Image (cartoon, rainbow, N blue to C red; front, side, top):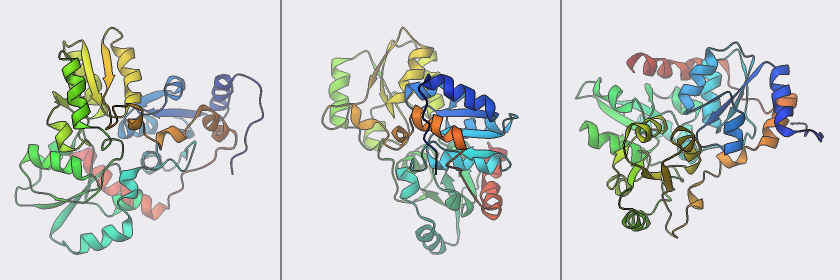
Length: 314
């Protein structure tokens, strides 16, 4: 159990002091709150952050994101201590695909190769042949034999998008991200009418009806690159809105509008799991290096195999 700090000093100063004391590195996903992003050593998508942490000499990795992201960091850096500010920071995609049910599903299709989106548990990774990200999935799929039957898990929207752009007919697990399912096609169209000069950019975890209206579809990193390369001055952003913090830093003179939900509001697209992490919890977890991400050596070896194959193919 974490010991709650009883300090009256500056919170950010405490975090930096404890980080130095434990030779720790702080990682923040693009979807974290702005104050966490600003105090982190690296900000990025889940795989990129874990790869960067792997190359450092840090003894401790503090992963400000959700549980599966911290698990990837532990799999790639098994000798480092990996902690998460709030162990309850899960993911709807991860929760939609439990290992027991997926094992039964896999057994029903023994002639299928399993491609799993990185947004899944270590147990699902261990049941997979190759792990993919939203950045490299299409490239990896294109390298597989055309007649190879494929199960894609856990995101049906990303799987459907990949089927469309690769011409495949992958068998899709019925999972989805609650954040990307909140966007309203009707409200986005209304926002676009009011901002005709804005381009709609979307993450491929969005449902097809949202992607059909998008000028650009890509991973978090790809979205950030696009807004800098494109000449447009205004963008409607259909992904978790905390990424806009980095967009504004990169392009301070451009305008970014949050894609709305069915009630016309933008607050519904905040990830409730990411929001469980706070500066206070970040400070507290650094006091006693808890809660730790613990994965058995056997599971690490099984989950690392499809991750390594992904890195080889991408």
